[in-house]
Length: 302
Image 1 (cartoon, rainbow, N blue to C red):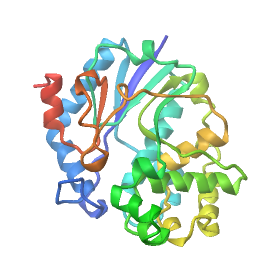
Image 2 (cartoon, one colour):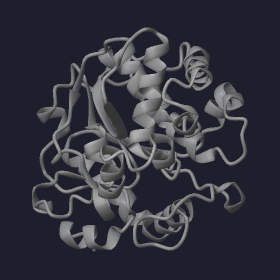
Image 3 (cartoon, one colour):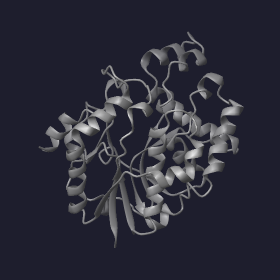
Image 4 (cartoon, helix red, strand yellow):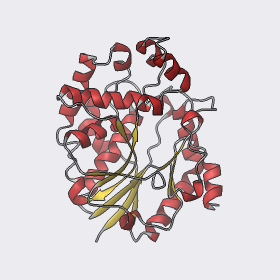
């Protein structure tokens, strides 16, 4: 049984960093904060995954050269400053490619910190794609002010969503639903977070995300043209790995397992923060807000 845990680390040049919103409570763009925090904590983030893979009896690899992927699919990302989006599709490409050489594969984003001695290879149903998916309905994702305005009809829908960031999970979920609706499928309100993935080679080979990548991109473009949920929300739709991965799972009826919160604990700040929960029960901590110091302290990482 050949098993691997892998991650990716690609240092994006300053000139190609997107000038996006800041994390809650921060004052610099997320892209800049991510780069600086990864540089600062590179050794610890790499070593904690290496040690975890060893504990799980798996090989560990970290990939950084995405030139092969760019040569094959980079033309789909022709807008300025798309390196981050390319990187996130690159991990899905590797996920499929590694299924040719390994029996079971687990992927961890570079900002994931293991906090357990338990092995996903033993605890997960590796006959399915293992991924954490969030129910992205309005009540779960919209803030209280937006919800109140919506339910009281105080502001029109377009006026509310115009201020949402394109990475907002509600926007990405609605992009997925729009893609499915172009194929006469209603679609659910679940959106996969691809920061942690796992499965065996058989089920991973069913994904075939990149066998017909152009057709998926065209489906997204069709959804944008049809504007089924209005022009303001549709303007947020973009070529994003979580949108296409979620679409692919649902459209092709690929068997998948929704990871429990402890196996993909999303560390966030602000109104979506799960900090009230017991972090000690978290097995794989996805430090989305990039505040690594407190997680290293929790996990005893020096």
